Amino acid sequence: MISEPSRYCTVELQALPSRIGQVRRIVSAHLRHWQLDALIDHATLGVTELLTNVHRHAQPDKTCTVEVELLLDRLTVSVRDNDPRIPEMAESHDATEEFATSGRGLAIIEAMSESWGVRPHGDSGKVVWFTLQAPVSSIHLAPRARVVHGATTVGPFADLPLDTVSFGLPDEPVRTPAAARPALTH
Image (tube, rainbow, N blue to C red):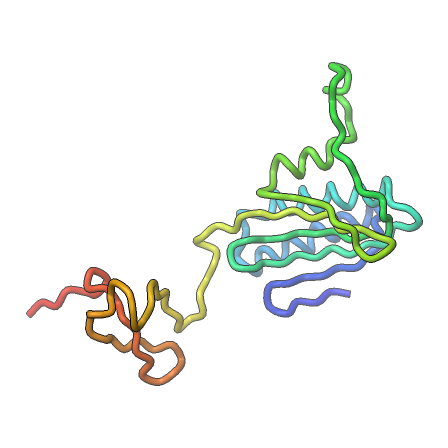
């Protein structure tokens, strides 16, 4: 099941190797659609690591849910499974572990994400999540929206004359600082 109310995507699956590649492609497609191409590599790497952990370690089954959500300037990717055991990051102390081919999933998540964590989910499951900072250039305002800083009735710009800016409501007044207005020339 896949759903997308605005900037939210959910995929339910069995964490099998063949399905992990499909989820990577789904996450990539959503990020491209949301114009977050710069986050594709990190998001797909992270979701691959989390799904691989479910595949290798989750008990009693491999059923899980991947959720991807863009809220303001933060992309959150989470994987929920039915295993209540909280994973721990492996600590490497031995030089031979430097060349290990597994056991670094959470360390990779920690290194490439802005933040990450684990939380219990109900009585029999957990959610492992990570966040990525969305590039400012990728965050778009509604077509007719304008960024307005400060208050419209009090504050340092309260004595400035009102300008009218269309916000989808007719004649909505907004105060803008003189420096932000175009200069009038005759």
